[in-house]
Amino acid sequence: MHKVIYDGMDKPQAERIVLRAGKLHLVYEAGQIRYITVGNREVLRGVYAAVRDQNWDTVPFVLRDVQIDAQADSFRISFTSDHQQGNIHFVWHGEIVGTADSTVRFTFDGESLTAFRRMRIGFCVLHPLILAGQACEIEHTNGEVVQGMFPEKISPREPYLLVRAVRHEALPDVSIEVRMEGDAFEMEDQRNWSDASYKTYCTPSAIPRPVDIDARTKVQQSVTVRLMGDADAVPMVKKGNILHIDSSQRWKIPFIGLGMASHDEPLSERQFERIAALKLNQFRHELFFTEGMEDRLHEAVEDANVLELDLEVAAHFGKDMQTELARLHTALDNMDHGDVYVLLFREGEGATTRETYELAKEALDDLQSVFLVAGTDAFFTNLNLFRPPVGMAEWVVYSTNPQVHAFDNSTLIETLATLPIAAANAREFSGAAVLVSPISFKMRWNPVATGTDEVAAELVTLPGNVDRRQISLFGAGWTMGAIASLARGGAESTTFFETTGWLGVMERESGSPLPDQFPSIPGAVFPMYHVFADVGDFKDGRILGAQSSEPLVFSGLALREGSRWRVLVANHTADAQTVTITGLDGRWELKTLDETNADAAMREPEVYRAAAGQVIEVAADQPLRLDLLPYAIARLDRV
Image (cartoon, rainbow, N blue to C red; front, side, top):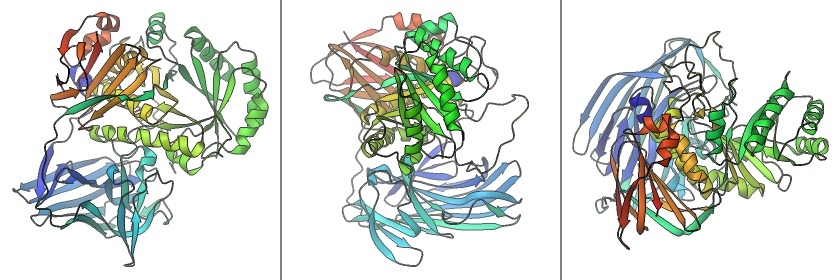
């Protein structure tokens, strides 16, 4: 059980090896290179290769024959990557060579062993968020060189096409060049999908896809990263783990809600009580115009009324929208409901159009306490690309999840930096209040699929939208970071996960349908439950500034309501961490949620929350040092 509480991953995180190539520092992990830096400046987020099937799904791989020769300022790594799934079998040999002249060359030599349909095979280069608004030089495949910049606001379309090389300043008098061979590349703004990077990738979007490839088709590519200029004087400064609390920075805590459970088991009396203790603002109900729609909507309204919550009705309209609107009008008119927000999603639309909005307004305008929300049930990129007209709606909505393109813990934590950017951009270009709903760990559905997946007759493995990290301490830490990030971006409302089940904040009373693969405790809460409870205690307060010096290692959430203060600190890593907190003084009560007590906190959350913590005295102008176990969350309350 401890493994799930601790991390939640199906397999241990891949071993990381820190390497040097001259003045370039980087990390090798599982066939990719990450976090390439010069001094303390990150110049490249990563380079990896992927095999994407016809639905843009990443084909899983196994590495073999891994050879690593690491020297003081150079290295050579080789491996074979074997990708297999269904009728797909593709194998490639990789070699990564770093030399003392601050150059890294990554080569890809692959061959398909079967015929299949693909979207992309080959390299992706990730440029970090800190480059937003910075000048760059783009060399195109025809040799032309143009001056440009990395987009500051999230670009809905590819900023650069037919790319051969990208160059930009790393530090004064020091530049970095990334050169790509073997295919034409282009750049996209991955912040559209919550990734914390700009991505330069192979296979231009202008080529019709998916592509049929035959067995024995060969693919060869290379990426060369080269430091240009004199980096000898660049210092390597150790920053340490510092969390600075700044009470002069304040943001409104967004309304927080949960999605209603997608399974058929109703809430028990105990679950109603535990949800009420979270002090939420809203429920989300998925409404499809199938038989029994009215009964399911009535159940949602009743649950929301019992808990005194607003109701988000995610209405999925088909081609006959007028008939469906009339049906929805009749259903709502016959129910005793509180405030209902109807999220307008229509088949064939990237985001709500004016025509759809006006149809809904005409049909539902006479209903009391019913409000319309425009937007998309898919990613932010849909809202960004198909922007509802400014001034049309008071509220706009999009969904988000942290693992569209990659699935490791580090990638999930990286997305916390992007969440406020997307929310702020949506608010700016729409002129409306922003609802982020729902927020899930995995994609709920694939809006870019070109084929269909086979559905098993019997549930034998976890569905694709379920992530074991739902039950983990890591998942709780990510959730804490997401609330803080979305508040900074000005999100008006955030709806997370579901109430119960393996997509929820607590397990159903009957337990997990696949306990061997999702080993939860029947009827228990998940660690993230306590994060929602901690924030709910301050629902009428404000979020304060909490700046992490190492946001991929730990993050913080500071809350204040009147004279009450609360600070949450989450360790996002598998290693114990010491965090120094500045900006606090006085007496504080410390409680932790970690591998030593998480099991008890899940089984008896009321007992855990009522228990007293350790009182700490913090002298004025003196920092507070916290020792955190792996994936631990600490809570400090001023007393």
